[in-house]
Length: 639
Image 1 (cartoon, rainbow, N blue to C red):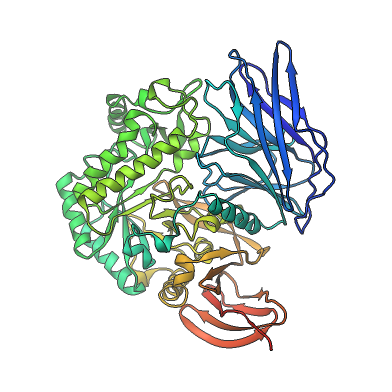
Image 2: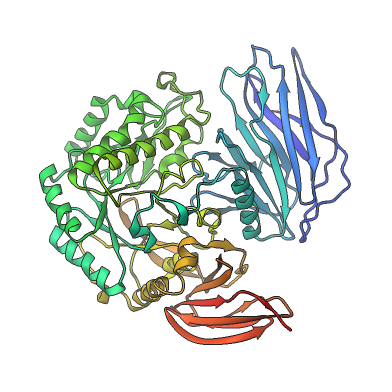
């Protein structure tokens, strides 16, 4: 495998220089080949242009660390972006990006993903049949960069962005390549340990003083329509509270005047401020936390809306100077379509965007809301940055948009602390390292077949995930994915269907009953505060199933692949727990250290099935459509 340096310098095309051969072979025991030869000084020469590139390479047992400087870049060609390193792809492989939970992508087409933006972590995991390699940085400044691969040129790499006025380019942090086995969990564990050691991660969740009490109890989240009868909504919420013996968070949707769901055109709300106050008072009377949805997404046209509504949307957009306050690309305004809706993104780093969330939070709190859920997954659209020079941020952005998001989150919390004493919940769809300390929980969006919980593996003990809006149905596929991976589930109830708990599909209801009864007893500390540890690589059979999916305020049918079971392992206070959510009955082999005797407790839901002592691997039988657990006491040596 070859290491290649490339980048864009001013008006010059992408450059590439081959360093002397750096063999980076993959081994299952992640020990790299020691036969290295390299140059740490490379001179790049172009016609009428020369720049000196210094590349430092240091080798350690399991890793290769690289640092690069480019100097001096002449004023006529300031450095805008550099690709370093670029590692050649020579065999079939796949890539795991820490986007949402963790997206697995085959290198069939070129893919580049932005950090901080759609990527929550500063890394990319590249794996082959025999092993893998984690490419990561540990930049406390959270500088702008792209992780990805080029299918045309057969390399994977890391593209660093710089401000347009840079005369030299020193990478803000070193890049480290860690050699691992094929398991993504091993790579996630390495990243977590390194990020924690370098101060990138927030205080442990169990030690934070700002976390609302309801999150410590492991709540159920209901997505309800604000347009529904509030008394029925309240009664339904109370039924769920009693049935599952768990506090409920109500995420109200439909406040907007023009139906954009999570946009910025919803104050005052459609049904009027006084009516919303009365509705929310019914919830708060019963101690229920209510959150609206909010974001920087700005809808101005929908093919499903009548002409007069689209006219109002566009008027609101222009009246608030939307064209100048939104993200601007190199060739003008970016525009997006999703579910037949056309929208733009207000730039969080513009003066208008920086004030938006804090200002709106104060109005929402005055209506009675005691929480806000930010649907800012549209941060993925920031891949190419913002080029509007009137916004006052770096061009294309550096870390300014991420810093503006963090500041907006802090503004929301300040607005809450001024008005609310006690439980105020701030949640978001995006849980990057930069903003994890401001959030109380985050919505981790699970898929099936092409996703792995890479991000929650890293962040869980610092910020556990919730708000997985699942549609009740006989096939519990996404609920299996959610609970088996340790996330707090949520339910999206269709506006025209007031489904009481006892009317839920039996398999869905039983899985929820199992999960919450386990969470109230033996599983609580592990699934709320525990550290996820490498477990089983689940190469289980996948079966196709048609699910009803809720996304962007739309219920639609989707064909997905569901595993036979989802299993994860957790460590807390010296003990280890395994949890499994199963679609089918089966046997899971739990590996144990030879010569060690363990006490193992077996659970289905909260019910303890048996307690045994074993020495060696254990064959754990799990039942279909159930949430099960296996608790291992501290290890004791055999005498």
